[in-house]
Image (cartoon, one colour):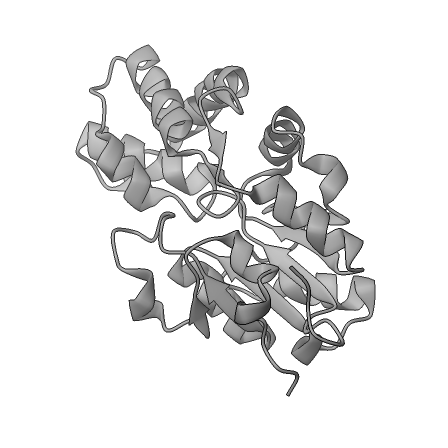
Length: 233
């Protein structure tokens, strides 16, 4: 498998949760560990799946509000306590109850062999991002990692993607973002880069086609499959 002639992208950026790694189960377990420690009822896994995408702080805020049947703004003190509890529980579970999607390390390695720079842009906080990547042995395959607390504004703001473009000195038309949610599509659009989306991740319960990415791909192998390569503009 190879690109005909020049590679179509000099930089490929990826989302993390729902794109490279299936993390919903361990996130749900950590959320419910936290709620149990606060003597609050558990939330369903399907709810957790819909809440993934904005980072773990927002995930915990939504879970706490639902479990307590209150608006998030009325829960400041319990929320701060819940964040500490969540941190303790998620550190234990992070990378343990999750798994890589098919062909992730193989595709990343193939892209690197072709000279493509690889970056991660996630809304997950850096302490969890590092732990997750290390436990799934992806750290060495990425050239740059941008977490939710690495930039001023998280996705769907373009800050993380724009940082990557500057860091590698790559023009927007030579870059691609790969994600699984409307948040990823909006972030790529805001940064002026093309975006391909995967249908199996976490998109707040909505089909990814509704977000109108440039392409919906069945798996990451499309990035190294000659039949799926894009012509240069």
